[in-house]
Length: 271
Image (cartoon, rainbow, N blue to C red; front, side, top):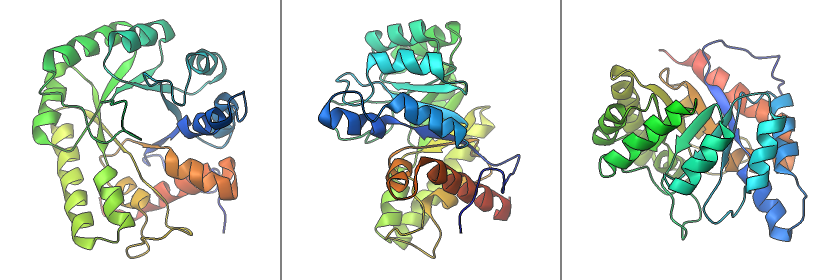
């Protein structure tokens, strides 16, 4: 069975941020202009994406500077600009003025973002970045692990939002590691509650996938559903697995499938 965005709706379901980085990765594998990540973003919006997320890296391995300019011109829904806390990126964000910014850790050697920001260890720099970007009109989120020390530091630094890193949960789900999955789910739940108690808006993302046609299922519940069911999750940001799913079903259907999964999970959540 397939679903369209109009068939299932829930006002309190988490918003879906669709990360288009891997469309740019595919383009860059051959050079040239195709497939165009901006065209993918437009299609994602048509398919029901609430937010378009992209990460401009220091090495420009996927999204390029010209993509950022074109996204700002073409996309009507909020843009979520992921970036490292560097002067170069802060300058670009100020010029671009995206609605949302997510500050993330970045190492040139990593394949993808491997952990959360050390806000407590870089407090002054991150506090300054939060103030600078707020002055530019962007809502700032910090991508962190579900660690009370980091969550408290994020609140003190002036960030209105945090995005909790769900990578360890996603890995446990793929590995069918029941104990690890439950441990990570509990840790995220507790982190979300603590962040909300400090007045933070709470998001989640990284590595989340669907159950359909994918191995590593635990009780036929997807990692996306496990996180979307948590009532404190206001936004889900998903990229690699959604674009991978789109390879088989198309981008519109992939977005509809992920949104439907999140809505079903939230509706069935006990609260």
